[in-house]
Length: 436
Image (tube, rainbow, N blue to C red; front, side, top):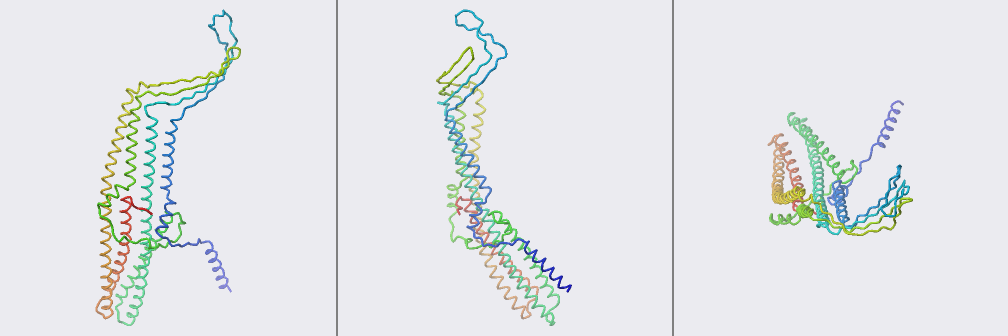
């Protein structure tokens, strides 16, 4: 009766814990789905959208400088001490009116007509910087795509490692059983059985590491694409096909110079710097504005003014700009040189990056060929060693070494194909042609 109560209690506890533990959702993930979800969830791209919005607002702010300035002011004044008023009207002497308060209002409107072109230059500069911000966002978008592809590749490699190591573990455990039977019948030394058991234990540890790496890869991928962290992702390898042919190095360099968004962004920044230099030089010119105003005033018992409308032309010239503008001019010229040199440095770096990415992809393809030959060689080596072992012509150590070599080459060829796919997409990203 007591045992029955214990079983009932344990069953109830198990059911309770099963209800409390969150269920792990599993889903298959293609590369295109990962890229689409990752782009929508990217905080970097959302930050770039905010930068573009800021640049667009700067353009509007520059365009609004063409609009007229308008201001309205008014005051009420109380005079606690009677002022002395002497009206020069020629009507004779008198004590003057008693004034103790005054009210007035002024409205002014000023429309810029000419200021050396500073408004026009400001609008052009803001538009160039807006275009640069948009191109920066496009460039970052390609980098985000490459990061997502890299995460997908890590997920795929971790998933494949589990499958290969698990398969090897099953074979290793079966080998231990077979060798254990031989050892019981006195056909195998105890030390050889221990070697096989040790290798099986090491394979179990390798499987634990592979499963841990897979879980981490899933969490990283889930964070990037906006899924719950505990979602189990099964990578779909259909989108990981390698290209059948590639262009020449010169063709990729031409693609980079034509399509790289950061090159075009620097071009717009250079135009903005050129315009800014013109704007600084425009400070030496006067500004002319069309002005208009309205004045109303009321001083009780003394004066009332209404409908006093005025219109005219105002000219302003800052004489201090003749000696204060030199530093600003030097700053603008220095900025212009910095942008030009930065553009040259970027061009040199792009040529180097294209060469590095191109060579990296070629090496990755060669590695696949070498590892595929290694797999064939390791497979044949294991087959021969296994036959020799079955006929007592090879030792247990030789058999175990052949098994380890086969597993390593199978892992290597899987990783090499995945790395080659990443290297190719890296080449596309470097040349500005990575589109998903």
